[in-house]
Image (cartoon, rainbow, N blue to C red; front, side):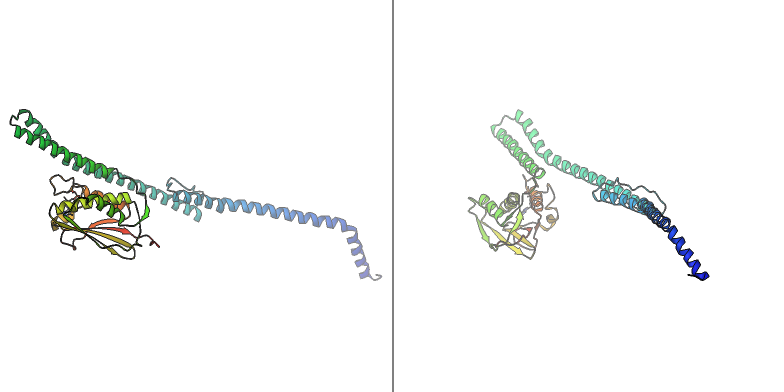
Length: 331
Ligand code: ADP
């Protein structure tokens, strides 16, 4: 252009043309610098965020997992005075309280176990002391007794008391050694039927009255453990009836969740004042009883997820109830 404006424009244009390569280079350098600085900044911010937030949270998560797995030694390092530091401090306090509570519970459990063991040993020693006393007195008298009748009497005493000791130790062993139940899907009447077949063989004085249980009812249970429980209950019922003619009634009660099997005898029943002590270990009203039959039966039924009780409202005689949770019905 020929005017002054035109000249200036031309100069500018030509200047740009001259500087074109250098400007492009500057632009690229500038862009690269910005990108590098941005990346560096992002990395620094990332590292800072990781130090300030992500890492403490990861520590906290690891510690929570350990506590969930019952490892109460887990602690979280406290590295700051902000909210995350407060969280770590609160967590450590909580883990310590949980550890102290667990230790206290362990000590209480150990103490209760020792108390129970002590009570059991005292009761056993008490039960053993009587027969042993009789045996040693009779043995002493036997040395000097010259009358043959008296000698027979003393020998019989020794024999009877040894039998009592034997029974007591057998029951005690059964109580201490009962195994873990092996559950299978069974007809809840089956263990009782088996016990009846064994114990009522030759007992012509007993009339058995059964109300059959619907076929489809099933329970998850260990038939051998339940059989042993029924043997104990049937033995008691037969001893209560004695040699006189008597009756055993087998019934049931059903609800949506449980099945109850009832065993009622025609014996004299259980006096009201004895009912609260019935399931106490070593409680017996029999001359040669161990007082462990009902304790064992109850432990065995409970091992199958059920319960054993006396139904005081059903009489005459005693009526014991074995309650078991129902499983799905047989098709
Ligand atoms: P034990 O038979 O060795 O005495 P148990 O624990 O089996 O021990 O029974 C405790 C007590 O409960 C018995 O001594 C008896 O007094 C009472 N008892 C249990 N079952 C019956 C029953 N069917 N009828 C009357 N009394 C019973």
